[in-house]
Length: 590
Image 1: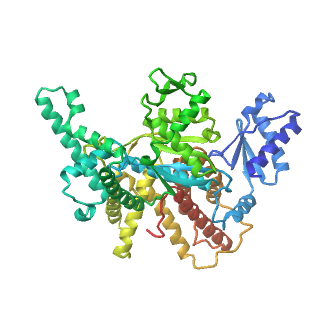
Image 2 (image 1 turned 90 degrees about the vertical axis):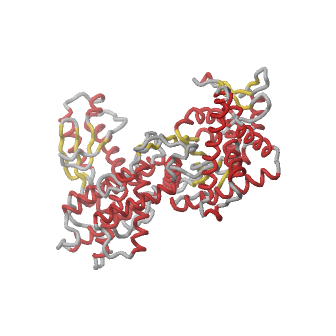
Image 3 (image 1 turned 180 degrees about the vertical axis):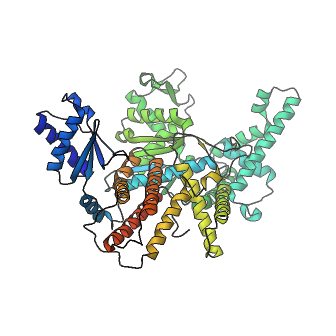
C-alpha cells in the first residue's frame, strides 16, 4: 500500500473515531511551496459530512495522524488545508527499494495486446514534416503502452494503390528516360516524389491550354489527357495488366527502400506492415453479414448504408451500388484482419490527423454494432497540423518540408549552437558529428512530443535546439552533467544509507521520482507523450535546483555524500528511461 492509500485509510478511521461519521473519499494535493509539508489533506469537502470550523477539524485530524501513522512526524493547518510532514526514514526506505531497479516506472505485463498504427504514408512522395509528427507520436505511444504493461504490436498500412500512385508512374513513363535511384544517386522516395510534382505541372499546363481554347476550367480538370491516361493506368492495374503491375512493383520498391533509410535515421521501427493493395478488397463479406444482422440496410439503387442517426451522426455508405468498396469497407475489413493475425489483440490505436476524426468515430461505432468485443478498446490518436513560420505545405507543388532534409537541418542547427556555446572541447570530429545528430534529433522529437497531440504546432528548428528552457537539449545536457558527476565520484558509493537527515531539495527530488510509475500509467491511459516530456522537464528543473543549492562531491559527511551520488544516479536513470519512451537518446557527455 502506498503512502497516499495508507493516509486515506487513516484519515477515514480518524474521522470515524473523532466524529462518529463516515468519509467516502479523501482529497489530497501536493503541499504548496510556501508552507511546510510534503502532502496536503483538503479539509473543505469533509465539512459536508461534519459541519464545524475547518481549521479546528484540520488540527484534530492532524493530531490523530501524528499519533497513529508512524510516517507522519508533524503537521500544520492553513485555512482548510492540513499539511503533513513525512518522516525522512520513509523517503530513505522508498529510495533504497528503487535505486537499483532498472525497470523502475514500468508496469507488470498483462494479458492483452495493443496494436499501434502510425506513419501509413502514400508511396508517391517522400515522408515530410506532417508525417514526422505522426511517426514520432505513434512510436512514442507504443513505447509508453509497453512500459505500462501492455504487449504492443507496431504497424502501418501503406497506401500503395490508387490514382495518386498512377500519377507518379505515368510521369516517370513519360519523362523518366529509364532513370533509377542508382543512376541518379537520389533516394527512391525522392525520385518518385519528383515525378508526382512533374505530373501536377503537366496537368496544370494541359488545363491552361484547354481553357485558352474555350473549354470551362471544371471540364478541363476532368478531361485533361494526362489525367484520363492516369485513370486508364489505374483500371489496367486493377485488371492485373502485367506491364503496369511490374512498373508499380518496381517504383513502390524504390519508395520502400527510401522510407527505410528515413525510419532508420529517425530511430523508429515496425513489427509488421499492411498494404492497401492487399486490404482494399477486405470488408465486403462483413457488409453481407451486417445486412443479415440488420446493422446495415440497402437503398433502392443497391448501395449499402449504416444508419447512425440515433448516435447523433448521419447515414454512412459501406458499399457502392456497383458493389465496389469505399474506404470505410476497407477499414472495417483491415481491423478484423489484424485481430485474425494477432488473436491476443484487445485494442488498437490509430495515429491519424484530426481531419479524420469523424471517419474514426463512424468506424468504431460500426465495428461495435457488428459485435466485436475489442471494438470498445479502439482509440483514434488524433493530432493537429504542424505549421512552419513560412506557412502551409503542399505535396503536389513540391513545397513540403522533407523529413530527411529536416533531420539534416536539425543536426546542422545543433552544430551551429554548440559551436557558439563552445561546449565540445576535447571531442574528435567523429564524436562531434554523432553528438550533433543526437542533439538535433532529440530537439526535434522533444519539441513535437511535449505539445498535447490535439494542438497545432508551429515548428521553429532554432528555438527547439535552445540549451535553456523546456527543450530536448536542456534535458540531455542535465543528463550529461549527472554522468560527469558520477565519473568524478571516485569512491565506493554502493553503501545502503538508512539514517541521514534529508535536505529539502533532496526530498523534492525523491517526491518527483516517486511519481514516475503513476505518470507512466497516466500517459498510457491518455496516449500522451506530452505528459512524459513535461514530467522529465520538471524532474530536470528540480535536479538543477538541487545541484545549485546542495554540495554533492564536496559534502564532508560521508553518508550524505554517498546518498547524493546515488540520488543523482537514479535521477539520471529516470531521465534516460523517460526519454527512451519518447524515442530520444541521451548522450553520456556534452
